[in-house]
Image 1 (cartoon, rainbow, N blue to C red):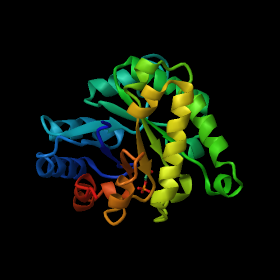
Image 2: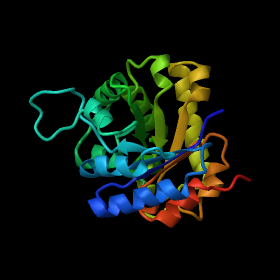
Image 3: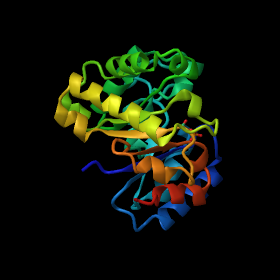
Image 4: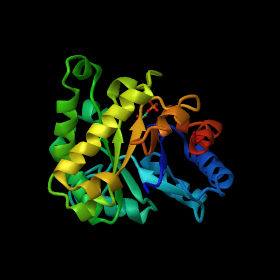
Length: 252
Ligand code: PGA
């Protein structure tokens, strides 16, 4: 009932030429897929180039960030409606790199989620604990805070357009994936939080992606878990063969 999603977060990688090449290849080689949402998130400057390359295909476009205002004196920022204008359907919000490197707070992330939904885009809302938080038994508390803070003032109806990505910070870009069971445990906890905050219906309908060193050799096990509905992928989304293999994950 929850459509799986495989999303590639390209981070700060790829020139215009490389974007065009990879996006066009994915569009071509994944043309037969309609049971999985396939998403790529290139850098801002490549969005329109990517949009052109994937036009009419199964691959959809996401931005990696946005600013929670429509227009105005906000030098260097980009609004959700301009991202939509550039061809995006999704926006990654609250990625741990932005939380850590740019001090993004739950409050700021919540403002972005609300503006993104207002603009008719779907947020891919990222949460996840650090190694220190996990080892000091604060993981559940941290996830609770991030979920409550990020989703404050959202309605059950708006939740239909929200995708959550659980990305333990210690697993991002490190090659250390959470085990299938560790990921499942966190996902099930997050689903429980959604039930408490909204309803059982919302909890059951919301897609929760896993992120953190998802690779061709571990995707099948992760995707076999009950509460894992897809993956948000960094490193392995930069190579066509790897990303294609992730989209073509094998069901048990
Ligand atoms: P990774 O990145 O797959 O390279 O660990 C995941 C992410 O940051 O979304």
